[in-house]
Image 1 (cartoon, rainbow, N blue to C red):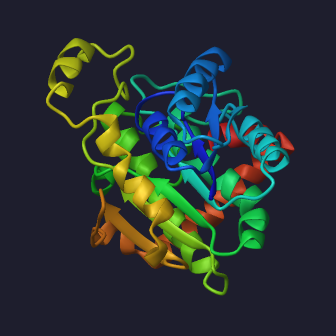
Image 2 (image 1 turned 180 degrees about the vertical axis):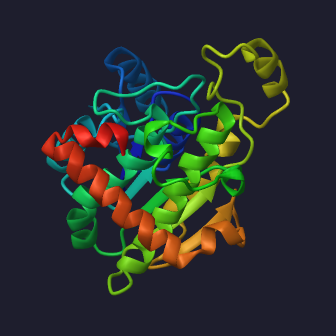
Length: 287
């Protein structure tokens, strides 16, 4: 039995991932921002879990660096061990919004939060042996452009542009992490789940009704969960680092995600931003 953490587990792909893992008898800690929605999702997953499977809820907000750190501490306290950490939570913004620390909202959720959770939970992951980090990414990442000064604060905001930019930042940092853990047995994997029918990007957008109609043609969250679940459980992936999957098929990365010097630079930039947020340095509001 694997002990698995799934972020953004109250709906969509995250809920489907939690359902699949619990149905197979694995222990699941569901990270949800909204307590009421999280409890409803918890009840649903427990109803479908294999007899004896442990399914728990950890209320955690990934919208700021401070709350991401609090969530990591809560997970470390709640989980006796961590075999799999699945980063599913994501945000497709429809308007430029800054969080309390001055970071653009999608940058905080899509990039900073996974970075923080990886850093704080890595000791526990490495202590488990053959643990895995699975990053749910997006097929739009090749459209992203890196602007180290502007993107963290949304100064280059555009709904689709920002989503792609933040997913590219996150993917480059995920692959950089895979290089930094090369002497351990920790596997680091990234998965594009496919074009999936979720509520991502719907809220508040002028084209939301059209998007909902188009999404009726897209795949279900259950199908979207197949790639992340396979990455979490396939025994042939023990210790594999830096692999990228398009659904369940291993695929090559676009050249933009293979820039090693850029990945190293973004890692350093991210650490600097996190330090400023921790120290309460107001300068981070302007980069």
